[in-house]
Length: 337
Ligand code: SF4
Image 1 (tube, rainbow, N blue to C red):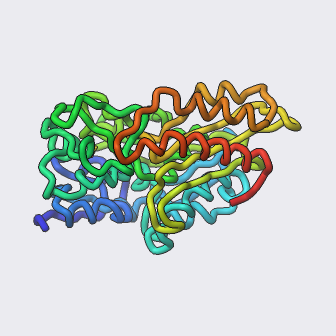
Image 2 (cartoon, rainbow, N blue to C red):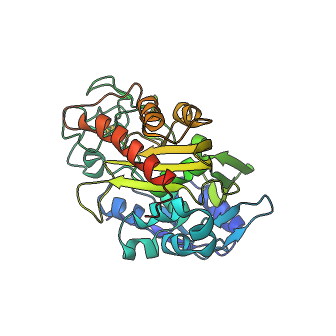
């Protein structure tokens, strides 16, 4: 363990001022960051504890949606009356993640910032990892890549200085993508709002960056738009065991139905890319169509267009399509997980 300073912030402006110092990180529930510090992957010199900031409420907002404070614990969010009744997709996704103990600690802001569980990133015994050590190569491309990406990856071979096939591990992020969340942040240059689709990144040429947050920016709150999918949504997570496992593939499916016709749809996949993989093409293909297996199969094909697998994860291309069809089918039936 490397030595570090700990500060507890009691006002947002104090946290932002302190957080803009070099090599400083904000500390929420610590369920990911502290592990990475123990594994010697992260080495902040200062931690700013933001769990005492006034960000622990879920409220109905004037736009007709909901506002979630960044400090709301995952358990509290999953079980909040507004979320359970208006956004069951989000509640289901949260309850599919981690364990009760971890959900009691983890915060909404921290969950947005979860880092990949790529084995080669998490274990410093492997020297090749462009995310941990930019320019060092990628151990996963020719290693054990069962949990890795099939969409949107950067693949210039194992020694490529920007190669990365890591996946975003969060369930919550997938549901928030399908729901069209907006993330409000504040940093040294002021406040801004980021649509969730622009918050997480694909690896591109900078796989070391997971998000578009600028140095010192603190997540304040997350807005959900007015609920469209309260009656017809489903979060389906396929994994190697039924609990306390990350997704091989997950699908957040929301349908706004007029009888059997789809007025609009939200569809995002987890476990397949460096960011939650929302598919506008699939959503467009669903819109205005009857909620039938044929419609769902077409959407699944579009969602996985261009997918590329590796030795241990090529099966995820077919699995993801089947999971999309199943999730849409259950959503259309109004089944609650
Ligand atoms: Fe590192 Fe990304 Fe390769 Fe994993 S997939 S070893 S995180 S560069």
